[in-house]
Amino acid sequence: MARPAAGAGGQAQVAGLLLSALALGCANQGAPPGGPPRTTPAAILSTVPESGAVVPDFRGKAVIQFDEVIDEAPGSSGGGTGAITGLAQKIVLSPVAGDVKVSWHRSAIHVQPEEGFKPNRVYHLEVLPGIADLRRNVTKTGATIVFSTGGPIPTAALSGTALLWVDQRLLTQAVIRAAPLPDTAAYVTLTDSAGNFRLQGVPPGRYRVWAIQDQNNNRRQDRREPFDTVSVTVDSTASAVLWAFVHDTLGPRIRTIEPVDSFTLRINFSSPLDPARPPDTAAVRVFALPDTTPVGVRALYRPAQFDSLQARARAVADSLKRLQDTTARKDTTARRDTTARRRTPAPAAPRAPAVAGAPGARRDTSAARVDTARVRRLLSQRPVPYDRLVVQTTQVLTPGAKYLVRVHGAINLSGVATDGLGVVEIPVPKPAPRDTTKAKRP
Image (tube, rainbow, N blue to C red; front, side, top):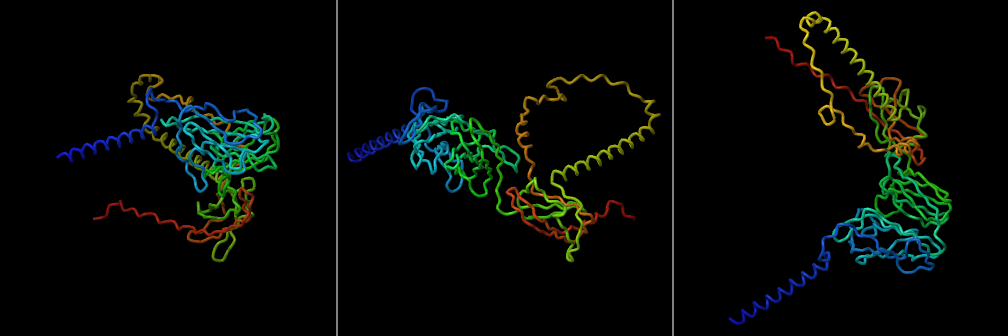
């Protein structure tokens, strides 16, 4: 009986050691014990080099020291091949020609370009918002450290706004690249929630500036990503507005053609057309099939123009209908006038005025109104692109017939022109349903 007892004691001792080791391991992973839990995000204590420092022949790694242990691998924002992940998503070092190495050291982040720090260069080390500590407190603001490995830090600045031209909205979180010509190593930053950016402490000179909608999160311009580029001369300050769009090397092709009414067709293109160079009536030809008899084109409309015409026509029709209804009501009232005089009801009591918060009162929405005057002003600087064209013919389109539509020299936003053609069949109207509500004779 002694051996089983001894065996049980040995098993209990081993189990105790395992539990102690597990507890020790869990303690090392979590937050330090003692004191109330911290609710504020980690703050930057110091950086090497310091912002504004001139450090000739700087070697090694730049260091960002926080006052709290930070999360080693925050959630990835997605992306494809070559996407930047982990802590590297929150760090932007520029100008560099290649990749940037970002490593975690508990309460510090180490940053180094693969090419090493170059002499006689002004570096920007930007820490983006979103750094999390072990208690999941996340920073809401960022910081930028500017230091030089050569001469004094310049005071010039480059700012601007990025917009999505086709979508007609601000481009937030766009990658901004500003390369001092003739160099190709660019200063890099991101636009904020208002689509704005600012690069301070850049050398004066001529810059090539890009705004990129970075869909795969690699901070580079890739095929099919909307972008725009401009050249800017930076003296003391300079500003630029960039209109990002997909630069298609193929001209716009006809995707579909659909009938709108007995005189109207709508052409849908594969890419937006240049609104500054729209096709005219001579560029669009319509032919009746199978003998390709020409059909005259009376007018071409952009979608906004055609929608406006239709809205105006509907408004006129509604006005006429209301006028007819009003006239009919007046006639009915005149017939009942004598009877109505005999039975005139007593005047109703005056209605109390609506007060704030009462049912029927108008709500004051001025406080909730968002000021978009600046965005509208910027968007008004360029006409709106469109990928549809409305064609009106000079004669009725025959139901059941097919028509060939040819567009010559349609130009996309990249300035590429091409010819396109398509075929449309005019639907045959369905016969009206028979009225079966009438009673049958016995």
